[in-house]
Length: 111
Image (cartoon, rainbow, N blue to C red; front, side):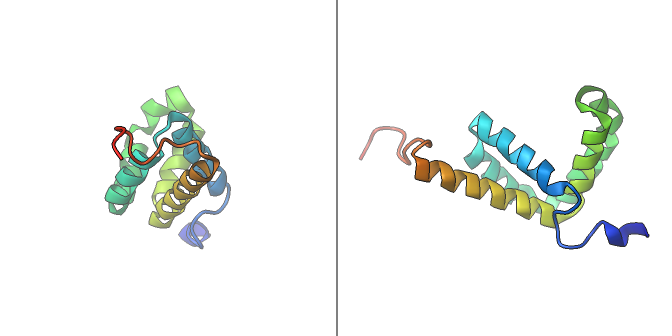
């Protein structure tokens, strides 16, 4: 079947679960805004990042699990998945804003 089964409409075949897992991890760390900035800046480099992840996979796999590292590497190969991830981060940020969980826009106390 080859590569045609991998592309499609972006996040497929369990990719949404990986994206959700990564987005929730970023949220738990409280890094939604920096992750959005970083992600938008380096979105065109997603494929190169995936190749770098495949390169270090034998080593990273011993720490994080080979299957998980491979899945994230394949996920990053399609730039559309990066867009789905960033959209999910934006949704989480809006949810936190609506729930009042995020700090106010002006952190320094000035009005």
